[in-house]
Length: 265
Length: 218
Image 1 (cartoon, each protein chain N blue to C red):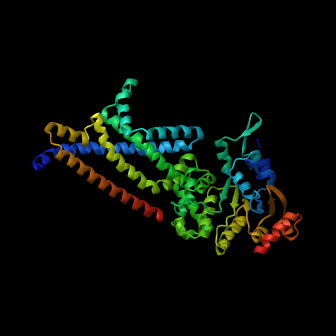
Image 2 (cartoon, rainbow over the protein chains, first blue to last red):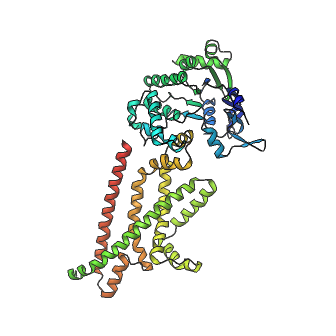
Image 3 (cartoon, rainbow over the protein chains, first blue to last red):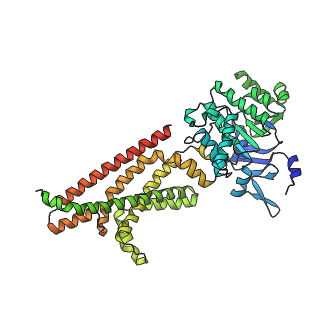
């Protein structure tokens, strides 16, 4: 339906009127958001504002109630059938989902596999790589995140920061076009955050990846992101480039939020 | 009271019968393990299927094993399904204990953190790979002791097969007793054989448990 040409002009991710509710509680209300190719977007906001739900929907961990999510020029939550968009079947979901990778707040590494095992499982079973190919690629990625010497370690033998870096390598091993980072430093001791953020910084410069991150690290958001979106009660309350937004937030809610988090630092 | 000569003379026959008991236990438990896993997975596969499977499990667990054995052996032939005594007995054991094992598997599966499922989705693993490589390797080691208890329990229930004349230990001892009117030696020996085999399998389970613990503690 798309030629390769317009695909490059389309946004990498598009939320088109996406609504998510749990019973009577609306978590996200008619979300409209385009994310460009290679763009780094930070999502900030108070807890319960729906920011994590944005990532979880894009990873297909949550069903949406209304609207369509597009990834790389094609609908993800829906598929085309007889000229109309109908809800996606599992096969379609799986195909489009391959373009998205995610890193979780609590790492979610497979505890019974080594760092290397974690990074080769999906490339072998999903992408069909040979064990050797998968191991070579995993070794490169573990090297990229600074853990070349921890290949044979089990998650329990690694620090939180190291585990989270393995989780980043594991997600990258699937060669996603979009990487989602869900509060990836929130479960870490402060002194371990730096090594994880350093890896994310490196990814930003070395890879032409589209990155979406939910974060409480305002300093990092300011320095790293091309754009910051402030969520409040299921809506984007304000967005813009980080310099402007942190220096002179336009919205009262944003001002209150930024004042509160900056004070707590 | 106790005739050593008689005791020794019946030992070879009891040894043979012990093999039948071990076979019934082994095949029955293998069946229970496989069936239990299938039932546990089916129960997770959807609300309607889950309800049907739960009802089946409840039904089988709430009726006596002896009745199930009789049903398979004496009632099934009227539906055209004729099973020999050993097969009927082993299927009944496997089915009955499979339902108990299904509950154990369920506990193990539910104990795997939700994050493991989410990571599997995020890595685009299929259902089969998710279960085989991620979920089951974490769900099963903690439930080995509970499954082991059912192995010993199933083993101790095999004398029920004597009711449909399977020549396992109990049936053999009963027949010896009715031939010679001496029950002391055969029944005592059968009791001792059961005790020894229970102790051996309990030790085996503890060994397996320790090995699995060592592996997961790495």
